[in-house]
Length: 508
Image (tube, rainbow, N blue to C red; front, top):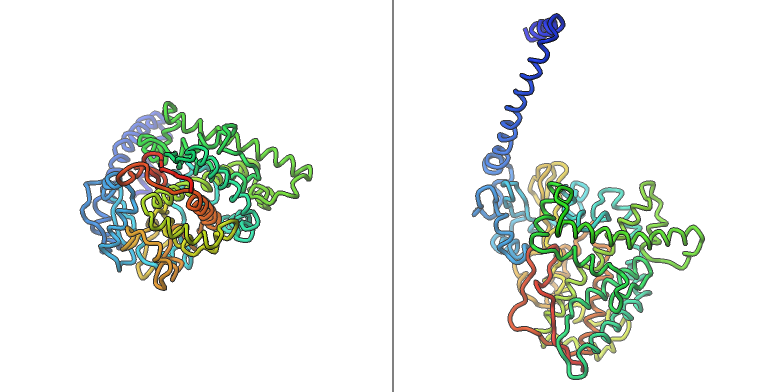
């Protein structure tokens, strides 16, 4: 019958072509009416039917005090730091492998809540997960292209290449670079406070120090942000990594809709200008190195940039080099600077820790790589990294149905990996000396993540922090410059104080 009707319709069109116009109008009218109805029905199903009545994950434990259509996302701006909210849930359901919560539009999200789930997602079943599209879009706007946005074999090969300058052996050989920068930092601070001591903006100086170190490790260039304004990187990168609340909102929305292209004005324009200026500055360095490589003048370079130039990859080109170099500089200084700032904030209020560190370092003669032998210093740094993890969460998305920790995870499910725990709020360096502490299992400490996605800069971060804290504690008495707790910047990309951290220093 349908075939007959179709034949008759085609015959009628052949005999009377003017009917085509009427049919086209009818089709367009039908689409204009039906498509919005289909979209609305799909939204109603995804937001109000599937998560509550159909989803196989709906029986997992999790918060139920949802806001209409917003789920738990309404709480995100109400807490100073998102992992604090996750930690509360972890305390409420400490034995659950996953905690289920609803996000914007009631979309389901899981919070990994056990060592088994972490291990399987990041190691034994890592091939079943990728970074979600929304996370790639959001972070790519801020960080540029780079290792965090690759998957599979490409990630494996490029990670191996990029890791070489950051191995323990390589960093020990170049420790003098870090030590030289740290001593420069201490001298600048001493000149600022004088013999009688005084209040200093420690956060700015720490950021500049760590930016100098990652530029040396990446380009073999000391841009000397500590004492020079020739490089624009400090001002442009901190401008983009520390946006206003409106800037954060724009960054989030831009991962969904290209707001920057639609409304290029004000802070939106400044963000792009900052990124372009950073990229152009790095581009000059990369192009100069490529010329030197062609002329055979780079045999003495063993930095990250030279490793990328030598990398044998058909998809590798000049533009890729520039993007990855920019990403490496951003990733290599922002998180480390944030965490080091919190370490100094803790020391200013914990004289007992300060004194214990000072005694240990005095006995060891903290000069050079002896800081690696300071056991309590190691405990302190690891506890700062655990307690003040600078990145709030790292999402992974299942690309197929997979069982994790005994739970069947449907394809497309987003899982948040976030630092949490039942005693996450207690700052206690001595936990690292206990047999049942975070050291008993690699996956009990997720600041750097684990498995194939582990941060390649882990060794550099810990070495930098140890060198900075050892020098400051040995040379200065550190006291708070303000009363009361330090406010957290919110919203923010990384965990940092709302206002620049200032401390009272007195040279010993």
